[in-house]
Each structure stands twice: as structure tokens, then as C-alpha cells.
Length: 334
Ligand code: PBG
Image 1 (cartoon, protein in one colour):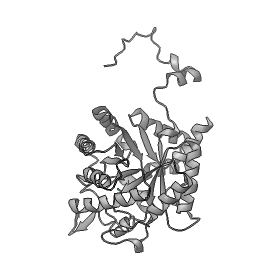
Image 2 (tube, rainbow, N blue to C red):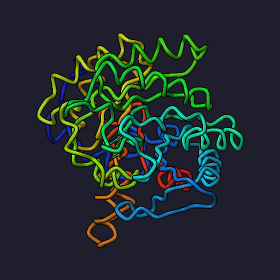
Image 3 (cartoon, helix red, strand yellow):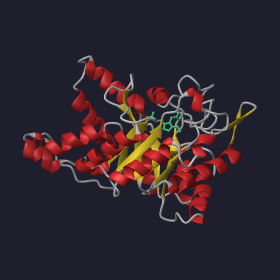
Image 4 (cartoon, rainbow, N blue to C red):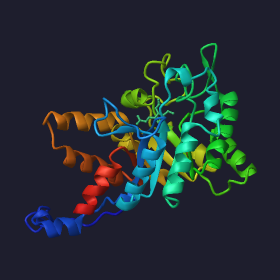
């Protein structure tokens, strides 16, 4: 498909369209726009808090009032939505992560502050227990096993709690089997038919989440790893039933995560399902570009834009990224 009959050199000179800026722009197959971004934001309790995260230069833990300021900035930059993640210290964590269900927890307070400040910005909530459990896992832990069906019940309650606070998109990142259908039913039963689900459908057990776990306070507490529920980085075929099931259960969109090392998965998923497909450029990807650029080893701005463009080229419809504001500002300038 899509085979154009090729002339031969010297009639065919593939460099010809690359010879000038106007022509390169005219021939560009993919484009980035602020419309492509969900801005990943880390929250922390308090007021007026902007706490640097060591492994993520330029990213700060923000208190709800500061997150509301970020939302105004996002609005002026044309970024459609924010994705929120809460930091919880060791004292705020429990074995079953009950704080996830507190209607006044950090996520809910931030959502209300943001919607007060910018009513028409999209808000995505992570659905998983890892910010709240004292073992750092995404689900309930019993005798060394992460319980699937029992965890789902809590995730449904967490979703309803977050929907009540004003979140527009639930993004289950836990990788339990069957959670999308249960969350859909749970939201509908509470009158939240219009709250979307973006399923972390193909989420891999990845080393690239390292800085995030520090950012949300899970790094010190996580016992073991997440390989019994997150996917094996060796696998590609397995991503297809993960996506198929989530779509069949009512996901409005699906996500591949991490991004840069999984562009092949993004392309396969997009080609196989033609569904709205998102990709998460995770904390470690951000950290690598920032660290190399701080050392003068690469041009940080160009590496940022190239990494983002690559997601679009691979077939992504949108990108969750810590770079959203920086990249959108650059796009606005140019
Ligand atoms: C966990 C969750 C993770 C991220 C988003 N939600 C990490 C994990 O699975 O341990 C990673 C985000 C990032 O690295 O930027 N529910």
C-alpha cells in the first residue's frame, strides 16, 4: 500500500525537497502543536509550594494553589489538559492506601482549585494506589501477591471519588485485568457517563519510571518491583490483547508507556486499532534529556522537540509529558 512508482537517479533526487526551509516545512508529514499535550504535574500538600525534584530539573512539586497557576499558564499556552500525580510522604501511606478514597485528598483539592481557576481545562487523574500504599504498589498486597479483583473494587471507588472532585478523565495506570470495564460501570452508576477513560493499556515494567517514584515519594517505600502486573519489555504481541480488552471494556483512548523506547508499540497499536492512542513520555525520558543537556552533551531544546515529534510520527494522537509547557512555549514563539 502507498507505493509510489519511483523514478531513478538522476531524475529522482530525494534531497531536492530538503534544500530550503520553506520546502522542508511544506513537505513535513507530521507536526507538533500544543493541542497534542497533556501536561504531567506533580502535587504536594501546602500553599505556595514549588519544590524542586532533583532528578527532574525544571519540574516542581506544586501545592494546589500553584497547580492552579500552572493551569492558567497551560490555558494561555493552548495546552488542553493536565495530568495530576500526588506526592505522599511515608506517614500518609497505609497498607491499603485508604487516602485514595478521601474526598478531601490532595488530588481532589487540587482538582477543585484548578477548576475554580480555569473551568474549561481538561483534568486527568491517575487511578492506582501507589501514591497511597506503604509498600508502593499499585494494588492491594497480600502474602506477596498483588490482588487483582479486590484491587479493582478500590480503583472503582477511587475513580468515583476523583470524578466527584471534577476530574474529566480517569487514567487507570495499575494494569489489573478487567479494571476498565468495572470503572466504566462504576462511573456510570454514579452519573458520570461523560467522564472519560484513558487506559494505560500497554504499560511496561520499566526502569524509566525511576525519577517519578522519587517525585511522588514511592522510591524509598516500594517493596520489590511491579513485574507481576506491568508488561515485560521483551513483549510486543502481548500489547495487542491489552489494548483490545481495554477498548472492548469501554476505554475512550489507550496509552502506551513509556514512550521513547516503545515507539514500535505505538505504531502497532495505532495500525491495529485506529483508536485514539496516547503515549506517556515518562520521568526517566525527561531526566535523560535534561541531564545530557545540562552537561552540554546535546541541545536540550532540539532533543525535546525531536523526541516529541517522534511520538506523532509513530502514530500517537497525543502525548503526556513533563515538557508540555516548555515545548508549547517554543511552538508559540516559532
Ligand atoms: C503508577 C504510575 C507510574 C507512572 C505513572 N503512574 C509509575 C509506576 O508504575 O511505578 C510513571 C510516570 C513517570 O515515570 O513519569 N501508577
